[in-house]
Image (cartoon, rainbow, N blue to C red; front, side):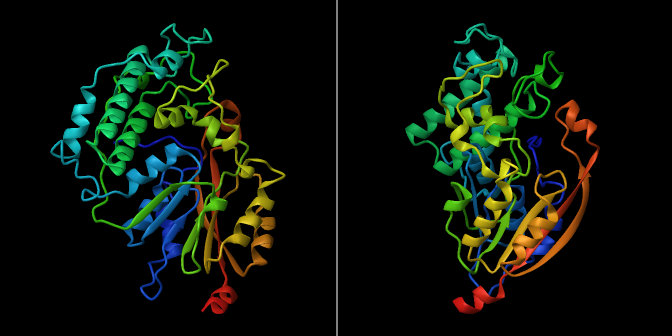
Length: 350
């Protein structure tokens, strides 16, 4: 089972982050709240450590991906198939379909704008459309539950990503086909959560999610100008299953309504301050990367107005390098966690 190539992924440092968070407190009925869930790797680690998880992201694709990180076999029995593996086997046998992905993101010659985009081979474009169409049919027929549907969509996104002809994001495609992109797209079973945990995954803006003072909140917003809604537009289109009006060489779907304030250098710190201010939780943890356009000292100063603050150095990880500019900026970035403890608010609430 491969991993999804994703900007700012915390997959390599999730244990360190959860070590700082610690185990759930049985005296308080709080949950681990992940407001920028992304690929759900931090939410999954929290669930593995016993936390009830509430996760959210403003992208529907992240909602599906994070749900897949949190389900156990009990949550997705796939009763009408005889199990999860059997459902995937049936999907892999789906007939190709000349749908939207085939027309717009493969060199099929049928793009409405006349472009011959090379995100997927023609065969894989048709196979992705066929699989997505079948998942939708199963949902309409009532053959799968909403949770099972999200899991299958997440598996399709991961399978499509593994054969996508890209450097890392869907901001552009490569001129020449890579070896992985020539392989047939194939869905494979993922390791499900070994034990069942309570969870809830929403598709909402971080400012709109309800949080309790007993929750522990984790914030990992985007820290650079790269807008996720644009860079992962094809994953969003596959998830939604629609046929948006796209244009230009890259075939971007309309994404501006999903733009994030955290991607604008002048707005990021103000947005973070407003977000922390509206969160009543006693403990808030903020991931920070040295690659980000927020200044760590300014973030620490802003956070200190809400309670006691500690900055923990997590170490260095390899830089995400999808293009020449990123590669020239160095091989590593430093990762930190800014921990805020709000004693006064909890005391007042109690």
